[in-house]
Every structure is written in C-alpha cells, then in structure tokens.
Length: 263
Image (cartoon, rainbow, N blue to C red; front, top):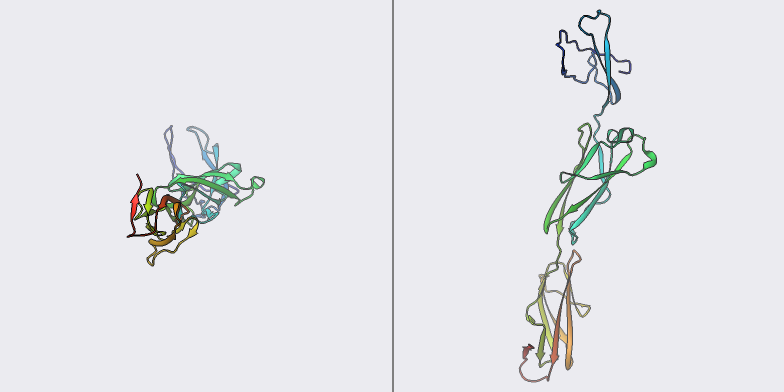
C-alpha cells in the first residue's frame, strides 16, 4: 500500500471463503489518505513453511469528499409547461475515475443523465459532469429536489429544493354575455367578467383595467350600428392566453337597454 503495511492476523482458518472487516487504518492506526491504493492480502497455505506466503491485491479508491453540486439556473416558480428540464453540474473526482462515471445526481429520487461537460479534460481531477433530467409536472404545486451521491456514498453538501407551480389555463369568464351572439339597442355596452390575480385582460387588443381586488373587470365598449365582434383575452402570469369571442348586433338606440341572445 504505497509503502504502508498493516496486518490483521487470523490463524487456523478452514478452507473456503472468509470475510474480514477492515477499518480503513494501517497497523499503526493511521487513517488512509484519499486516493488510489493497492489493498494486499497475504496468506500461507496449510503445511507451507512459515516464511512462504502468497498474496493477492485489489485496487481501492479512498474518498471522503462530498461532491459539489450546482444548478445552471434556478427553476421557475410558475410555468405553463408540463415538462421541465432540470440541468446543472456536479464536480467530484471519484465520480469519474479513469474516464468512467460512478455516482448519481438524483432529481426527486430518479437518476439524471450524466455527461462530460468538457471532454478534453477527461482525466483532470475535480472536473465537472453535466446532468440533465426531464421532470414531468402535475397541475398545481410540484416539489423538485436535487442532490448528488458519489460512488463512495458521499452525499453533496447542498440539496436544491424548488416549488414549481404548473398553471396550464388562464381563468376568464364573461358574466353577462354567456351566449356567442346578441342583439342590442344601445351603442355602449359594459363588458364584465372574472379572471385570475395578475392576469392582463384585453378587449380587441386594448388592455383594460381590473377592479380593485384584481379579479374582476367591467369596461364600457363603444358600438356602432351593425355587427361588431368583441375579442376578450386574458393572459395569466404563467403566460397562458384564454380568448372568448362575442358578436353584438346593434339595432336602434332607444328604449330601455335590451340585450337579446341570437339563436
């Protein structure tokens, strides 16, 4: 072992397979340093002279260093995409010893795909491995947790946890115009409805103000005689658009306001 010798005597063993627990220290009690070592086992066969030993060796890697995990970017708090690609990098010497990859980056317990970020530095210590994982979201709140574990069992000091809200639809309801086509006897019509907090509402491309609580609107629209198409759109903070279309045919401008659905 690089000039370091330790012993663990077990005499009188019967032929067969035997297990010995080793504490990772030399005979002098020193803890092995990190890196590559040759672990040697010496033994003497029954009846062999006292000075005749056989030996076998195994190569081991001592690693007590935690992998270093980082994200390429924080995950969004709000999205309208049902799949989210989680990317980042992990640096750890033992995770890619001699060009092989041993270890895991886990996203909600599922192994992410690992690849060399800089193939030209393949044999450099503490180089980075890139990771990528496609997380499938459910509507509403989603918790995504990312951490790394190397081949020696060392867990990353940092664990990244994100709350991602999937909002696939913008809420929009026109309260007084439930049908698609109406006859009306006035040249001004108040379009009222309900949306969600933070949404932007437009009528024929013009943004209209929301009421004080930010969830409802009531906006007057000027009409001419004939048929006018009103396009009402709400776009929520997640970027979802919802569009409703209403036809209003104006006939006359007298008498009590009468709004009649056209069937």
